Length: 229
Image 1 (cartoon, rainbow, N blue to C red):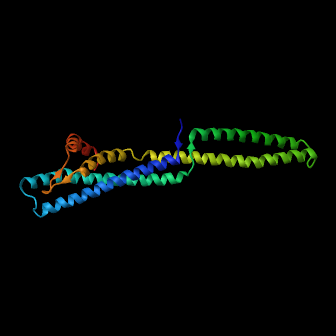
Image 2 (cartoon, one colour):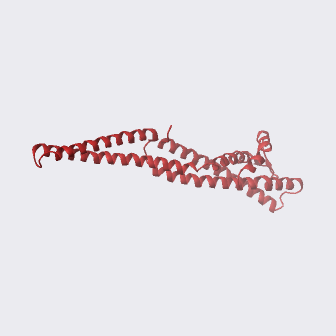
Image 3 (cartoon, rainbow, N blue to C red):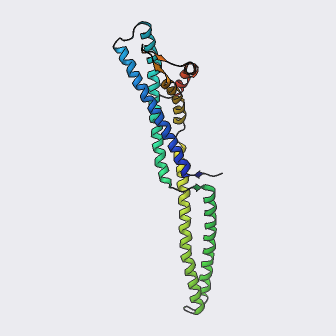
């Protein structure tokens, strides 16, 4: 099966990516505000003893690295989405099916070959009769009609070839996108979603529910280690 570009599906992908990025940015913004709250508590010595140690440890080992990597993952994905949008706009607004376009091209080239053969035949027939004779004039006229139609066929061939070129160029361009950024974004979003669901208590400590804490203990550090800096 050949390449297929569907503008509706492409726009759906863009909308989904933009939506996920927007969600991540809201969570990251909330985490930034929460981290500023904890920073203020640490800087003003509002925390002390065990609370201070727990807050500082959680902040330096978990919150800051997560926010930093999440922000970078989002920016990386946003950059690639912008590139995708540019490539998408260059394709056009019609469905492009490589197999169907190749069939059209094959049929048009067969037609082109047939017309060329017929034009040459009329040219030979015209030359076999005295110039300006009825038969000569008739064959010249028929040759002219076919030559005019040939221009239409040639133009149609160029249009199909251009569509194939755009389709293949689009595929080559977008093929390099989202290879790592999408997986990194998905991984980091799972962590920031957990952090985003956490709350600070009156002592400034970050509190998880049991399910989210279990998730982070089991997967958080492993996921963070797989996300590039």
